[in-house]
Length: 134
Image (tube, rainbow, N blue to C red; front, side, top):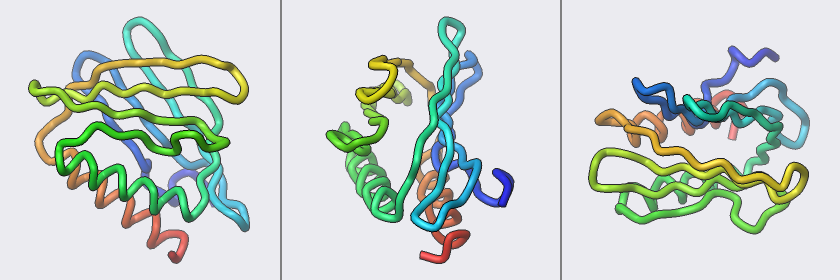
């Protein structure tokens, strides 16, 4: 399997160069291996991430929260990198990636999102599920 076999689960990017991407790089019997990458004019970094089927269910709940206009977090208090997402009134998402386990670093950036970004992420989730057969 290559990373081209799966869409990015998360792909938020704006014209200012700020982005948050969660892409997959390998498949394992119990889940998917990938990386979370953050980019901005100030900081660039990436960290490994493992995603299990139950994480995809939790990601759907995060999308549902965002659809209702609620701020939310993915994989909060789990043995994994957390992603916190807050909406503002200017079509922006404040995203915070927190690594409590290895680097002990949190990176926060604000990304201007286009119309339809949430529908795009529901579609990405479904395409990942279709690719792994869940």
